[in-house]
Each structure stands twice: as structure tokens, then as C-alpha cells.
Length: 353
Image (tube, rainbow, N blue to C red; front, side, top):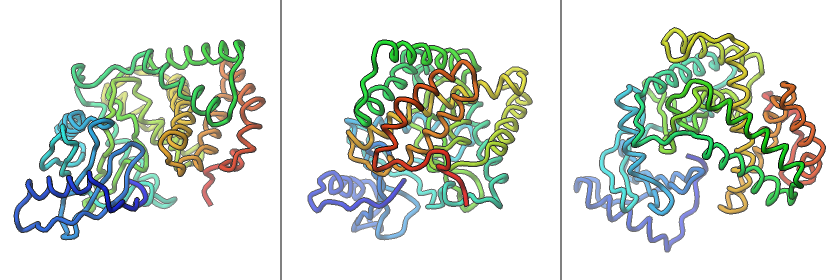
């Protein structure tokens, strides 16, 4: 949940949500007056009540948001003792819900140099709980090659072509095709498990009881186990020193081995899984952040592109099999990116003071 968004006086869905809440709550709550908390990268909007309550009203337009999935995944997580929002009442056909208000203390705002080890250990332990979820193939789709490729092609269409105005030639397309195959292979051949798909500092809440609340999980898939770990540790909004990231990643590895969630694997192989799946995610995110601006008019994400470029090039330059892509990106796309209004020096993007 991000910045507050001004509401139009003619906001018919907000009015309909207020009426729905009135019908589904005790008289003591009335009259219902909704106060916006803003939206997320999707189209969900969150509202508190003028009268304090432990619940949030959620507008999740059914044309774009799958509330059936949200309710079902929330139940799975709560059964796994992960603090996902309790749901008081929901009407997925209308796209209206009343869900638990877990406060405003985003992990993103709470974490600092003094408490980082404590909070990241908590976040990794919570992730290990998520990875104990049973498979529900009727509910949680496979993160298969087709979906992986569809996501990677968001980079080609929205970042390279639409944001930077660059069209790939046949040779460049072949380079990316081979890169994408290699990244897909890495995702599909590592152990598979529950993937939150957006497990990072803006989707985690530090609750008053010290536990970690997990939100924005309705896009969950069944895929490579390092996906959520790299989303957390190479966060597109928050950067930590490389040695810290490695330390935390290897803590996860050892705990996952101890819990028999992954086989015994060398640190080098595990970090390759982690790095390459992170590269897949960051290539995709370059396209998604561009699309959020160009299609959805959410320009705030452009300022985060330099950090995503930094992660992309750091990993790609680290492995011989990826260096041709790194060289092409640096030679071809980076000079165009440097001319954009949103660009800042990627070498220092995300550095903490």
C-alpha cells in the first residue's frame, strides 16, 4: 500500500463499496465514511473508516483482480501459521472485501542498519513457513516455461521497445531467446514450491506483536524456491551490501536443507539458482515498471529502474554465460536509458547513506 490517492467526487465504486460495507457491518459502525489509503501496483484500493476499526475495506475491481484467489490463498497461508489478513466478509463478484487491518509499519520503513539482521531473519523464517505450504494444483498455477517466457518478453516489449524506443534486430532477438531459455531452465530445474511472487519490503508489515504480516499474495504460483528469496534480498526498492545479501541467502539455504525443503546443495550451486532467478525477475521488472508508467499511468516506479538495472548488470557480468547479454545491454540500451528523465547513475542506485 503506497501513497494516498485523491478520490474523485464521482467515484461510483467507492460509493458502492461504502453501501456494501453498510449492509455487511453492525449498526454501531454507521454511518460509513471511507478514507483512502491508496493503491498498489495492481488496481486494488484500500480504505479505513472514519470510525476506528480493525478492518479495511478493499475495492478490487473484478475485471482486473481475482478476489476468489485472494480469499483462497489467504486461507492457505493462515493454515500455515503465516500472518495473512483475516477476511471478515467478501463478495468476489462485486470485488469488495473487509479484511484485517495489520497497521502501517511496512518492513520498508521499519528496517534499518541496526535491526536488519533481526528483521531479515524474521522475513526468511516466515518465507520458510510459506514454503511448507502443500501443493494445490487446482488453485496455484505452475510457474512453467510458457509463463516464464511471457514475463520475460515484457522486457522486450515495454522496456526496450515502448519505453526506450528500441527495436531488436534478428541477431539481438536470438541473443535474448537463448538467454531466456537459460533463465527458464534454471527456474524449472531447481526445487519447486510455493512462490508468493512479490515477497519484498512493501508487501510485509511489522505487526505490533512483532510478527510479520504478509500481503499481496493473490498472484501466487508454484515455481523455483529462490524466487521469493531474491525478491526479498534484492528488493527493487531497497538495496543491501552484497556480503549481507549472500549471508542471508546462505542462512536460508542451510535452514531449508535442515527442514528438508531442498536437497543438500553446495553454496555455489545454490547462489547460482538465486542469482539467475533474480536476473529473470529483474529483467521482467524492467518491463513491468515501464508498463506501469506507459499503460497504467503510475509514474512513480520509473525512479526505481536504475536500481533494477544495477542488479541486472551486476549478476549478468558475474557469469561467463551471461556476459554477452550484459555487454549488449551496456552497449545498446544503457546509452538510451541515460538520456531519460528518470535515469540516475545505476552504479550507485540504492546505496544506503
